[in-house]
Length: 156
Image 1 (cartoon, rainbow, N blue to C red):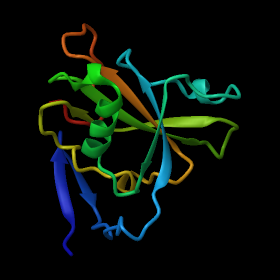
Image 2: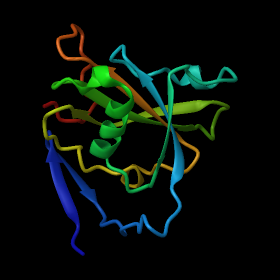
Image 3: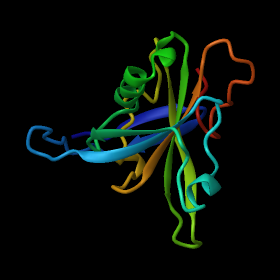
């Protein structure tokens, strides 16, 4: 298999080919997804005070799940987000080994009704590990103050 490369704002993102997961034979993982309709991600402190943010979805999926696939699952349970132009920004929340707490790492975004460069990005390509959380900042179309794309990411 050949390496895939994508150019985003002058950066070349090269990803190694991933081994396909046989979803018929591989048990899915429980993905805890925390959503925010403010257009901003939860702060790392929201995960360290002995709890988690209140808006949680529990999704059974695989490590090869794409951001587009995860967008569809969020839209299934939240009808308001089905509107064309809704922006979904994804971040992985993982334990910080250097201090007792968590880190939030933005990984990509999708827009409902539009194709984008992060649609086919998978959890495993971003070093997601079983036990990590996924944080999704949702901005409905027409909302003032839509979030800027994460540093180094292409805005579309």
